Image 1 (cartoon, rainbow, N blue to C red):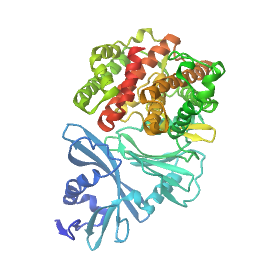
Image 2 (cartoon, one colour; image 1 turned 90 degrees about the vertical axis):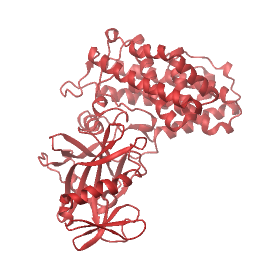
Image 3 (cartoon, helix red, strand yellow; image 1 turned 135 degrees about the horizontal axis):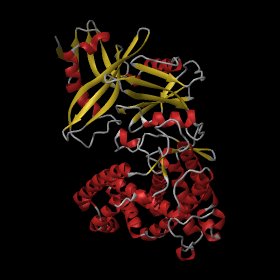
Image 4 (cartoon, rainbow, N blue to C red; image 1 turned 180 degrees about the vertical axis):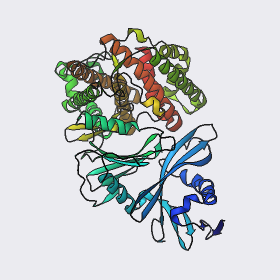
Amino acid sequence: MKEKIVTDSNSKMFSSKNNWESIIEDKDFISIFLSNVLEEYILKQRWYGGKSSKLKYIELSEYFKIQQGDELYFGLILEVNFVEAFYHHYFLPIAFVSDENFALENRILPIKLKNQEGFIIDAMYLEAFRKVVYQRISNALPIDRTPVQYHKTEGFNYPPYQSSRFLGAEQSNTSIVYNDAFILKFFRRIYADKNPDYEMSRFLSHKKEFKYTPMYLGSMNIIDSENTNITIALMQKLVPNKGDAWEYFLKEIHTIYKAIDEKNIKLKDLPKVKIFKRKKITELAPQVVDWIGLNLLNKVSLLAQRTAEMHIALGSEFEETAFTPTRFNGDYTVWLKNRLTYQFQNRLNLTENNIDKLEGYSLKLAQEFLEKKNEIRKRLVNFDWTKLKGERIRIHGDYHLGQVLVQDDDFCILDFEGEPESTIRDRKVKQPPLKDVAGLFRSFHYAIYSTIFSNQKSYSKTQEELFEYGELLYRYMVAIFLETYREKTQEANLSIGYTNERIYLLKYCLLEKAIYELGYELNSRPKWTIIPLKGIANIMNS
């Protein structure tokens, strides 16, 4: 039996004869909660990834209890179904609070339980909940057979709980900082499998002792009704940092662009360099070093070294099959072609439907993209694995400057969840390590063009001239990176192929990445479509 009481024009109080401990058993309440309440609530959340699709209905896929002593919270796994015939799963922990002065901005709904009135809220906003999760992880047993499993690194002793706070405004997850020393990332969108971030973090820092990623310290997982292990949260050591490499490179590139005017640097006086030509810093012409500066050149080289060391660690496993290197084969080629032809057709449709939003150079490049569609499709389909001698390994999968933290004079790599559009299975497919390198190169390209867009009034050159300087800067960054990366991987016997194979794979992966980026820009920032379109044109014309 249920009743609905309107308390004011903006809120509705629901009554249930159940108490909090048995609220999930109230089928009438669950029905109203999912359809009348969560459908509206979830659309407003930053972590909700279905905003571009039409929500059809929400189902409660699974629920589990998170408790300690008298404290009880429910972890809900919500299945959000869309009109377009697909679905997402999201994790939402809920708590009941009776104090009407609490969580004014984070209430999901007012509710009356038996004889007690209060509010259901997202439990993340309740310090008592955050403390319980911390204590359950810090006191985890070596082997946990319960449906809700907590794990901690063997031999690591957590200090007592002191404090917790949100890390900041995140797009897809929610991270909690504990004791200003540890960070627990709750995965909001979840998958029926172990999260790649959990697997990669644990493998790199715990098994391979790779020091340039946050140390894995623990996790929270559930075993669902189909006996699948699902990652809910990942605990890592908090890394002191000075922000991410994206912001760092933007500042450095802005300085490089200002130097064009300050030092009266003429483009014709700067030696050209062929794309993918490797260069040592000591081999660069003095005028190039004077323009770009040793600081950025050294940072590009260091980032190449850390990237190589990450791939060396990922390619050095011979026991755990999820991480053992493998060769290219027909199965991988079929998977790759199917995936990319579908994605490419999607981008073609988006470009055709949004071309009226483009103008100038962007419009010209978009028209060229559409004109060359058959040539591009052929390039994607003609992936001949029989000529490739390098290895495939587990890779980062979504590697860009925003996934790298700056630590004094070094870097720390994080966020191994993989490409947001990919399925959980696709994210775990072993790929050429040069796909990560291509992702970083695309990020270099973005940083250069973003600097132009954000600071153009600070420079005297025209936009077209700035693009020309930018393309040359990009080639020098690529040249320095490739020299260090090849040297380090070769020293460690990581097989990434010979020169021609490396160039072929880089071109292929850069084309794939730029096509992927085109979808985001057309949907969100039409002005920025020039960046992926220019990337596509560079590869097709090289």
